[in-house]
Image (cartoon, rainbow, N blue to C red; front, side, top):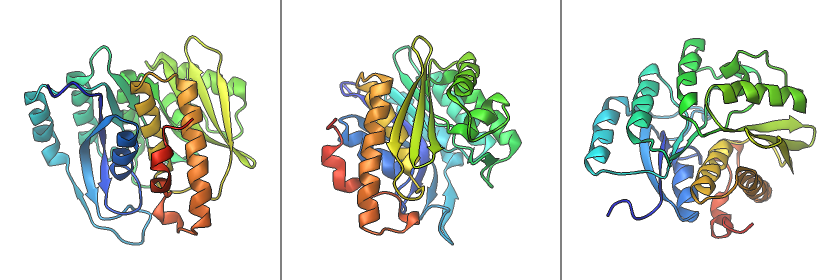
Length: 276
């Protein structure tokens, strides 16, 4: 009875303010008519882009939480993983995938590790290596360029051309994923997403860049990709959908003059999220 509706397990931290992580995935995935089942990794009062924040890890409780889902015989149409901050959390997520990923479960791995050619301050090279152990479970992998380079041991260059991006995706594909999106490529006044599928020609999907980078934008993107995948939408169409939605929300966010730390005001367009 629990499995009569489509649902996605989302493994990420919970952030009370700042529009990121689970606080983004819950409304986005729900608005796309899929049940969102959160598995928190940590609890934050507000994200780490603010001057101060309260934080407590959920790591010691994750296994017991997962055990209760197994007792309920929950089955997931999709699994989405986001930021993981310790070797213990990566190991727990790997066990979760081994237990809950079925043949028809679409798994989206967003390997959140760094940007602009560098690891985030909270990440170590050893932790980045461990993140690579989740890649074989991914049906869809959504790294930015930095993360794609880290996962493959490729020297980072922000101006990689289409041939080089294709070669990079082939390295990632050899690790397991059939579908890859290298997201957020900055090209002058535009942002590009490079879409690679094993059996198709690569595709570039472009949107005009609107304002500065903001917290949680990647969470909106990966949540929409996961929900569309579960709903049977082709990857290129899903990337078009997410890119256009985010661009529209960013324009409104700029009109409201919201601080960068406050993320993007997607709430204003949730009723339109299924419009293409």
